[in-house]
Amino acid sequence: MMSADAPEDPRKTLTKRKVNLFEAFAVDSGLFKRTLFTYIDTNERAWAGEALEIRKFDLTDADLRKNLREVPDHDAFPKMDQGVTLLPQHADITKLFLKRPQIHCLLREFGGSIVPQMFREEVQVLEFLAQHPHPNIVPYHGCVVKRGYITGIALTRYQKILDHRFHDDASGLDLDRFERKCQDAIKHIHALGLAHNDLNPSNIALDSNDDPILIDWGSCKEFGGSLLSAGTPGWIDDDFDISRKEHDLSALDKIMAWMKVEKAKCTER
Image (tube, rainbow, N blue to C red; front, side, top):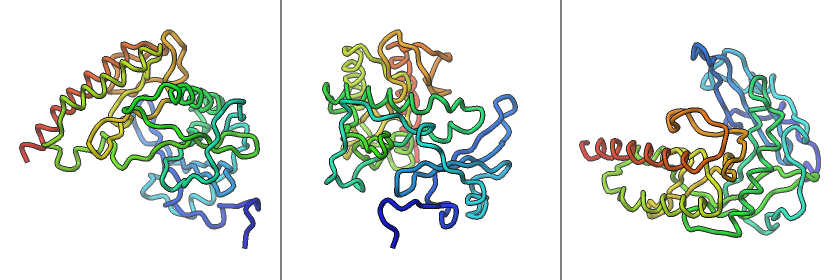
């Protein structure tokens, strides 16, 4: 039996269902280029790889294992900082969502050198928000630390994401209540001098009452701060690299307009 600290080599046993898959497309033509895949093993080590001109649904386990490479800790994870909340050892990780760095961004044109910095900044924001909680902001439970590096952020897990809510019957969804809850959460972070900068249907979870929970704080920063990443095409007016509260207000307007259209479709079914 493998000990807890024994090195794992997923290139021998890993299957596609255990990895995170991402497809990359050419910016100019929109044509598919390659599939990227990442994995965190049982010892909190990062692995990544890519398969050229193979769509993720066509990727085989053999393709994956052949192209998988271990990522050095310092490339994937930020160093542990003083004052960072540690996830309690007794915590049931199966009931939490463990967010990882965007390891796929380490591959080629994504500018991977900033991956640890982006993850560190998100931890700092979550530590601050934990001191100023709000019922419509995802609760933060601390970080997983291994070998002196922060390898994961533990957050409350939600079963539904707004992006997928309209796959089911959403005719009874209270849009006015939803908008009020979102506005209240946004006003809360703006009063703290912060903007989320990437509100979209993929970054809003829903609790059991269909109330919104703002998630994904990787682009959150103080007003006027320079952003390493920001905005999602389709939910922003223009590309930007400075944190401003107007980005959140504009995004919410777009989200609500989209929800009204999607709810109308549900009602017509």
